[in-house]
Image (cartoon, rainbow, N blue to C red; front, side, top):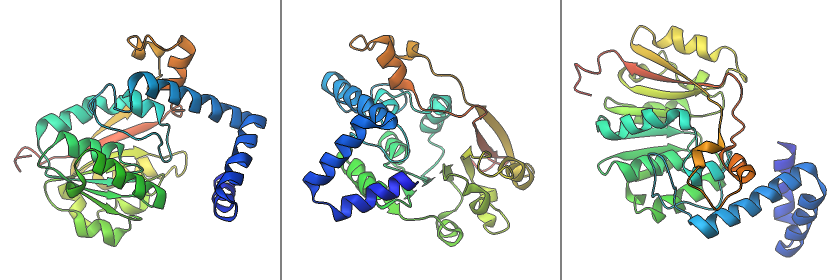
Length: 273
């Protein structure tokens, strides 16, 4: 957090050339900097050989960017990002059950634009607190010709979420612990009528998973999804990369015990979705 704040301050007070020089020196001298520099070199090599489209997974073929917000860019380009969710994402796309997805914590738009591109009648409401993230999200939506179906909003609050929740909606949520405050059917009764995919951040707030169970078990079926190890074998067809580079490409620093939950409303069959 301190590092990010320092970068923002320096970017605003230093001329562009000077900031670039300071950043490069930092990258060369610090351990974290060398790690970043190595990944930037790998990113350049990957894009040179494979281009900037997502290569695998449910969003294969999506035009992408050369940077990400709050997550690793390389797994997104490779199409291995959050591989645990791939079967569910494919199921969502193939079912055609939703006409709106609310993406909370959309970052630069991997899911928001990926879903919009894969589901031609879908509209997406994408909440992202970070200004740079919103800018990149707009660029990504435009690059994939879905800008007219992706509505970009800022920080997600209870009133803002209340205004867009309705029947026929899927909530896709990764908001770094904010799910405890936001996903509360006492404050937003409409949550009882929608399906939700939530990344659980119990390491930030241990109340989260117990709260999701308590709040939604009577109205939803809860399916928990566990994080799995990454393996370079996912990229066996990436023959332009070394084994070490393949390991770097799939690395997401997923925490041990990380979970997601798919909460599917119990009346989904009766409602036609």
